[in-house]
Image (tube, rainbow, N blue to C red; front, side, top):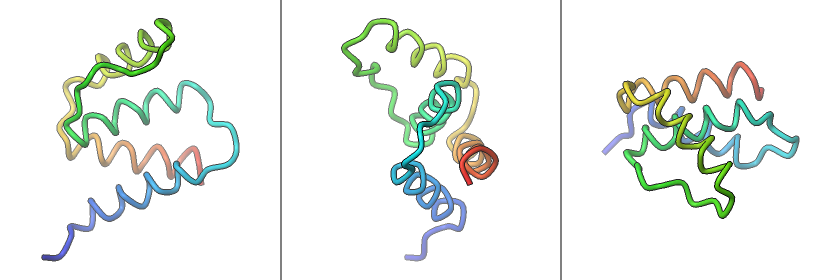
Length: 85
């Protein structure tokens, strides 16, 4: 079965972020984190050992909570294209 174009673009954007060698600003990372989690329907608690980082991650997820999977994928792709390319 052929993958949808949006899913392929999302996977390419994720691969780009994972291979990025420059430091990524924290606000961008938090948005990417939230969009990724929503796009993958993964609502597990943040796994950092640092409570403050967990709080920032939980807040980022909370701010994006009304997005659909499709909207989250699109937002992720757009953010990578705007900030990291």
